[in-house]
Length: 468
View 1 (tube, helix red, strand yellow):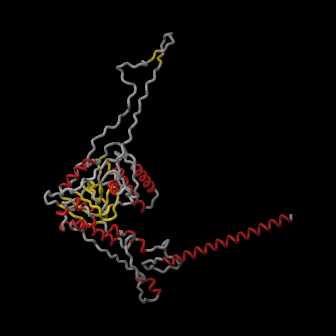
View 2: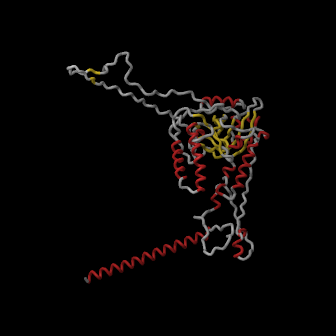
View 3: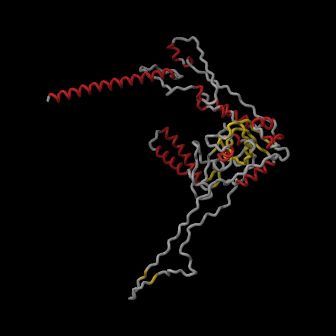
């Protein structure tokens, strides 16, 4: 009995010591965490720019950023000069409630570029351009600068003003200076018109066509299964991205049932948009950035007397190579210089949706205004080649042959015919005493009888594809 009592006492003492140790440790961790939080709050506290309507009786901690930020490194390409100015003020209690006592004046200094106006100036960024297109010298003049260039940079500057308080939305230096010039060319003899612009080359991997490529291959984070260039579907094969959009629609409709009134308004707009996309994907096919050579123009370039329209034939000049293309998509108003992944990989094999083939303003795009075909369809690369060769000759010709595109769309899977099952001979009962059965069908068909097995369908016959 005595031994049992001493053992119990020892366990009680050990338990008390252990509990005290845990309590002290947790208290120490709590104090350290509080001290660490207060230190960070003092370093990066962001005061509210507007005074409080009435002083609060309870103390509240102001919101703080969840980390340390170096503003000079946050926004790519923007040079930041910082300076602190001080002045004598009133009492701290008065200055605390004055929003202008503690303020930042934000001013962005931007130089708007001047467009290149002559063949010599164009040659400074694209040295081979004048040699490839000898007729360019007679068309590239000061008066050829298109109003689209000024409109482009007016749009960029306007967006800078609108987003100045949101530094995360400002255009980067790279995207602000993404267009060297825009020229409205007109050949003096043939009168052929063309729109030339020099820019970098971003990558467009958008588009889908279930008729040609039943399996999806969208790999870009910003991938969209649509392009502005489209045509009516020619088969009953579903668009590979249709199930995903239908699933998104079901999830949005389900969320509508329990959403708040404000959220329901947003979801209603999303439902309308998704239904429109589903209807379009069931009705149309689109270009595929991976397989089709096309370029993207800003939506502002599709308006005015110098406009480039969807479907117009075009060429892209990178280095000493001329690539036939069409205008296949329309992009944002404030960005210039984008080609399909098919063109990008031909320029630089390492290209992908996140890695542009040309970062400098050395890509030249020439769109032949008003040359779009009246009816659109899957790309006919041979027709594209021939048409661009004729159009190049109409602006003075080229000293190098155009790049020849090869169809890289994988062949459709060959359907496997399903055979019709062979009829099995059956026994017909007879009142005759003979035990020998009489078959209903002859086991050996006559020479004139049709075969017992027929394929259910044949290999699909290719239909003439509509050209661009």
